[in-house]
Length: 513
Image (cartoon, rainbow, N blue to C red; front, side, top):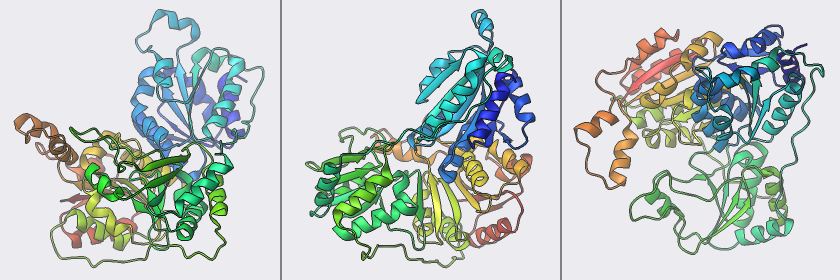
């Protein structure tokens, strides 16, 4: 078999059976190998940012890794932003990137680029296959690395794809054991959490499932505040979920939120930092003198740390965990607002739904209602590069086909990856897309004021607003094969959400506020 065939067989032998793809000429032998292995699910995305964002969403919700197939340096570059978001969220992804044949590289063909450089700038691990006999082993190692929550990239030269593998396929080894903090540090942290002014800030696997339960017990036992990051990669919310306090986005609000804290123990999360620098303000929001105890980094063993921390704190199962109580608000007969979208979603989402959040400005009005709705998981934009929502929704739906997915995105953000609608239609994925149509990059108006800059004039307004011409999201959806409707009232949104729930495949709602 050739190198490409050995690589596909290696992926399947290693339980990697989904490949999000946007292939080109250099990958034709890999495409041919995929074609002869129907047990590999190949999903075409029409832009590479959709490929990488979908692999990220798949990783977050499946706990497994997906492959991506990208084309040369420009193709990888197009997928870079959502790999950045995935890296910040500790999502494991295996990138297969085609390149020119080794003997062709010296000719500097039009599509040749510094692929090693661009891949290395966002990947934790990169290996170039320069010989067909090393392709399978490179793929197996990439899978092993990715299963540790890292971005792994195999550069597959065309001649290595078509050349004789000789060694054949292999199987990825288990990922390396995750690092664990010293037990005496865990014991000290448990003691500190019982002191006044202490908080436990958790992320990663500590925000859902067993990890969240452990965190809730620790907080109940020690009396500390239990915090989560604003951009949590994945968090369980809604009825019965462990009640975390989410850090705000706004720098001033975060400083106020953390006022009085004397110690913050961090498990799976970095120390809080303001999203941007602001003139005359500090870069970090914690109060002066607050100790930051970075007990467990994001790529360390979060579950073991929480288990050991619970043991050290004396958790015995008798603790009463603070949990979210469900509240379903009434739909108001009024023009649609961000709060109205929140009320509509809170009424509509079923238990077990997956919410994908990129409602950048409107989120402050939407999520307080949804947070106390039916039990669900939420995916957030971890790296701040907009255009994550629609691709993440693709991956989440592929990972969890029995769970309805709701993608809630601002109109400006969604335009970055509008092609994802086509993939959702082709794959008949159960995704309800809610486009918050506020007709601009509204967050930039806030940031302009926060930076102390003058009020927007003609040029600034032209760069912030998308009103001339107005985007027609119902038409855009139809053009990608997705039915849709435009609403501008709370009652209209409620009806549209009912229609979406009864529609096979994706459905788009343009929610004008």
